[in-house]
Amino acid sequence: MRSALLILLAIFTTALAPVRAQDYVPSATSGEFIILTGGVSMWKWEKWKAQPHDNWWMNFVRASRLRIEQIQAASPGAQITWLVYRPAYLNRAKQDNTDLIGNINSVRDAYHVKLIYFDKADEVISYLNSGQNRAVRKIADFEFFGHSNKKCWMFDYSNNIDSASKVWLHEDDLNKLRRGLFSNDAFVKSWSCHTGESMSQRWKSVTGVAMIGAIGKTQYMTDELPILSSPNGRWTR
Image 1 (cartoon, rainbow, N blue to C red):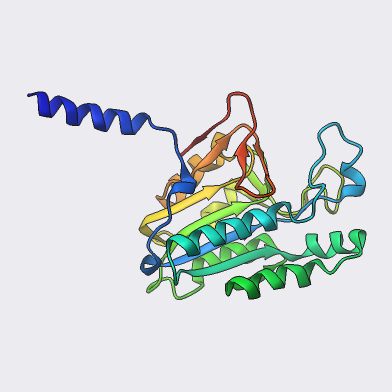
Image 2 (image 1 turned 180 degrees about the vertical axis):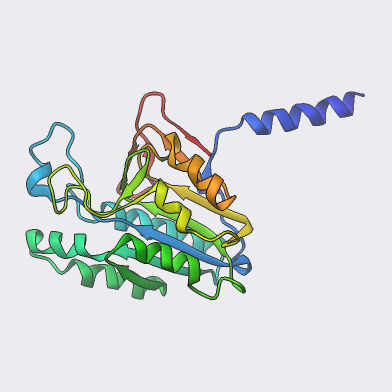
């Protein structure tokens, strides 16, 4: 009887434990790892705001690189595909007078990942649906770094239009995803703001796979993965 109670207590305690996504990396043999990186804002607009975005152009690129390092350290040989929203970095490059695409390519070369630039949200949907022969190789890991609100990932937030977006992946667009894309133990996380408030739930209903998202805001760091920044923020599925 005592043993049974201890087992039940352990299960209950585990269920209450906070989500710590950065502690988990699926097996490299279980499928493709996909990192999706959105674009940064234009500093010429953001610098005047009380809470500006993206003082550093590498905000999302650095976070993606850190996660790639983490995956490769935990699972050598992992097949990693890196999807990057190109137009935002071309625009920011003109402002910063720096070859940002060349810098992103250097990360690809240093870590030997497959880099695919995209210009439209539908290209992301298309790759998830058909890339790497999904009938044979499922998606084991899918993670997003970029701007978002509770209902969509905004790939060009404050890059073309100050404080607005013209290119996004809305939760309603998730209906375009096919079922069966992900492996049974797939790990999915949005490291951006507010995703856990709506988009995570829609993701689960459409794909059958849980997506960890933030309640509240996240803060992108220099040498670590994004952290929760809202007073009552938490990760949720």
